[in-house]
Length: 418
Image 1 (cartoon, rainbow, N blue to C red):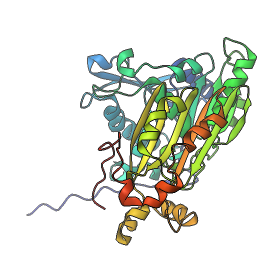
Image 2 (cartoon, one colour):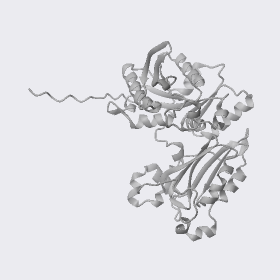
Image 3 (tube, one colour):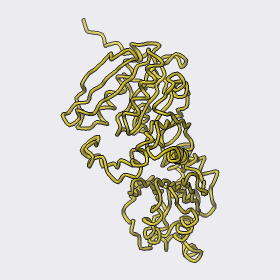
Image 4 (cartoon, helix red, strand yellow):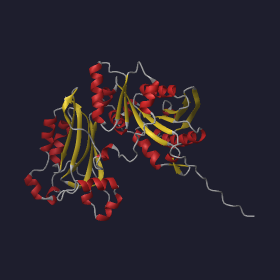
C-alpha cells in the first residue's frame, strides 16, 4: 500500500483583536532599556519579556532569556549562525515570538533588542521572513517600536567617532558601523522615544537633549522619565497598546522620496538646537559640493536626506552624517530617468509623491537635506549649499555638458539596468 502524502501544516491565524501585542524596545545603553523593561513587567506580571544577551558572542553563543514579572521562564544558549549576531537573532527571534504567542494565549510580549541592533532591521524581518509558512504578523500584532535614550550619555554617543569594531561590540566580523550611526538610526526609526534620567550637566542640558530628540524624530511620540522615580502603571499606559507602529512608513533615507516629512525647519535656536531643511530643484555641481562637505557638517550632529548631482543625473544619492562621518550611497534611479515600464517596480507612495511635485523640466529630481546641530548657523549653511547649485549659465548648457564635469564622486553610485 503506498503511503499517503504528509498533510500540510495549517497555521492558525489569530483574530486581529485577540492577537498578543508586541512592544519592541531598543536602545544603545542597556541599563536604561532594561530598567524600562522591568517597569513594564512590574505593571503586568503576565507580560513576557524576550531578551538576547550578546556577552558570550566571542565564544560563538548568544543567550536567550524569557522572563515574566515573577521570574525567568527560559534561559537558553543559541549557537551563533554564520558568525553573525544579526543572522542569529533573525533566525531565533521570530520563531521564539511565534512559539510564545501560540503557547501563551492572552500574554503580550516585549522584545528587548541588544544595544547594537537597529529596530528597522527587526521590522524588515517581521515583514518579510515567514515562520512555519506564514508571516509573524498573523500571530502577533506589532504595537510599537520604542527607543530608550539615556540622558546622561546620549550626547556623547551622538558625537562619538568610534565604530563598533573598535569598541569590540560589532555584530559580525564585517560590521563597520559607527556608534553614532547606530544611535541615530535607533532614534529615527522609533515611533516612541523615551528619554530616561537626567543629564549630569543639569536640567537645562536635559531639556536641550529633549529638544534635539524632537528635531531628530518629529514623527515620534516623546516622553521624559526621571529614572529615580517611575510610576510603572503610568509608564505602561504610555508605551503599551498604543497602536503607533505604521509598517508602511519607509526608512528615514527614503522618507523624503515617498512624500513623508524628513525633518523640521526650525532655524531659530531652541536651547541651542537648530534644525534646517534645504530644498532645491537645481542639481549640485559635483566639484563645488565636494569642496564644502566638511564645512556644511562642521556644527552638525545629524544630517540626512537625498540629492542629485548634475554629472550623475540618473541617480538618487543618499546623504547620511553622524559622529563626524558622512556616508553617500545610491538610492536607485530618479523616476524621470526610467522608461515607463520601469515605474511598475516602484512603490505606489513614491510614484504619488513624485507626481504631486513633478516639474516639467526636472521631473522628480530635487535636493532634500536636513541638518540638525547645536549652535549651527542656518543662514550660512543655506548660502553655502546654494552656492553649490548650478548657475543659470550652467543650466543652459544642458545635461550632456553636465555629464562631462569633473566628478570626484565618479563611480561611487552605480546603477543597475532600468
